[in-house]
Length: 301
Image (cartoon, rainbow, N blue to C red; front, top):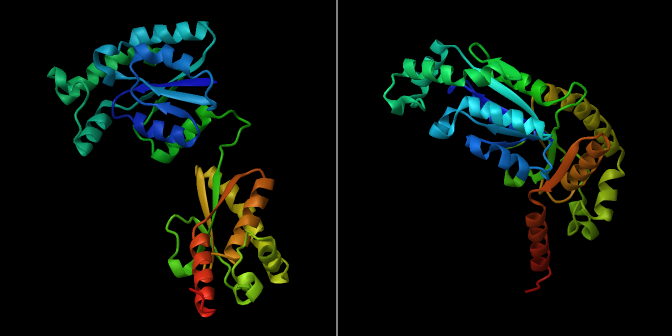
């Protein structure tokens, strides 16, 4: 397990960093009092996250002393913990501008200091941590995307790729397009099992409907082209820093064709090494609707 202590100047981007580290799969704790650092590390020995990020900074008030934190980190390393320190900073004028834009109070403003004085005082107090930092990041002229790439390089080894969690979502157009979709395929051009009496009340998860949908040449052609496109898109989404992708598959009701295709795409993505899950938004509702209509037509109560 790898621990990353995130510290630095208030307003320099520590909150953004913590949020992005969460996207990378790290277990993150913000504003942990330094006295809790070693006990927290002990408690994390059995967690599954490969990286644990802890933000510790001047917000802890009288609980925070940079020299003491540096000593704690050294002692934790001596007993076997793997720890890096990430120090995030920006120049004084940039920090002043950011505070004025957000209209937030600096943590040291309660001491009766002006904003400029508070920034200088904080920088002086944090100097022991800056001098011993494993990684130093200046966000003065850094865009959020550039900060993300730096953090990814800090957390991930050179031969490791960031994970992309893929959700394949089936839906019915009759109930609206899912707003969370990143990529969407409309499969209403495929032959519809709904019009075959023995299939209409089944779903795309049932073998008879699945076989009906997947056996058609047009379906096989579509799957080949769709997987070729996804094989191109997903690595590029990863390169751009995306960590969750929703692939929506839509048919009329969201019960037959879209379900079968979503299951097939999710399975193939898994074979390609991606973390792929599948969700059927409208399947149960549409199946109940079809059953109720069938019973009504038969005159059953």
